[in-house]
Image (cartoon, rainbow, N blue to C red; front, top):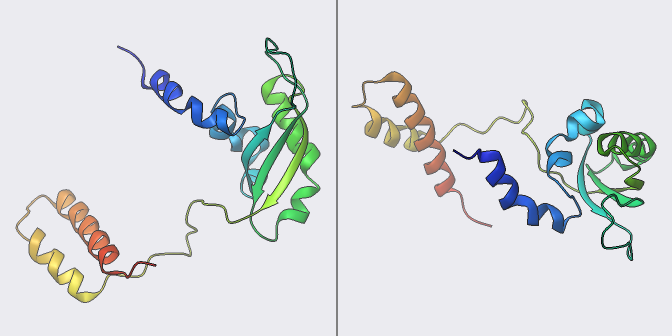
Length: 160
């Protein structure tokens, strides 16, 4: 029996290599590598390796790590670039990163607790309640109610 991790690495390797990451570990463990305070403000975007390095060289040095941060956080984060480089180099075990480039852009991330979705419209609630009313298992009924309300609310929104 093969582990799912092995297959996941094989499937995702080309995507991560396209952005200069030899492995997905740096992206997946970003918060552990740079610390929670920096991870809350930035995320790794890509690594640019120097051109013309020997083909058999296993440890390339002098890469530029591009990190994406939220608008308005770039200046404060630019003072932390040396700390980011040190922590990433400690993670790799050699001087992989020479410079850190900070790019300001909208970052996808977890929804803040204050950003709760609006309650579904009354007609959606009624429609879902009539469909799941015959289900006796409370956990299943609650899950299907949430799913139905979310799906119908999303379907009712106009597309941009």
